[in-house]
Length: 115
Image (cartoon, rainbow, N blue to C red; front, side, top):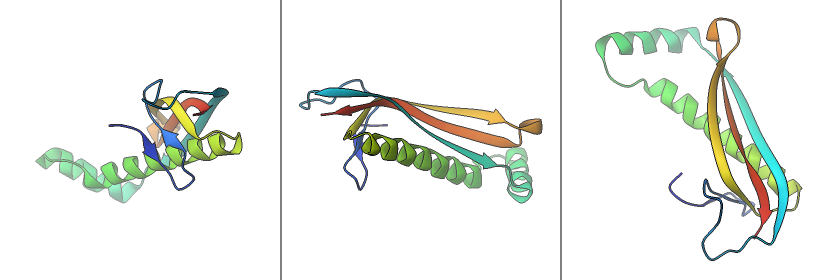
């Protein structure tokens, strides 16, 4: 993330541990958001062809972007439920899970705070 990002609820999300000009008044604990996406045989087939001929796999990039956004939205929703208005120290993780690596889990975690 390039800098703080806000959602419709006004929850700021940043990978940094502070927000410049916004002192943290209260720490509310760790919040997480997780999304699991399954593999699609047709998308996999076209991605494999793309890998053979070269280039980027736009279909996978879109799926990853959507999963990342959903995980961050879950993170923000949990923060707002706890009464926070920002999540600091956000870490994004990607992990292949399931039989034969058939699914991808995207998780976002950070500390919910009041600034």
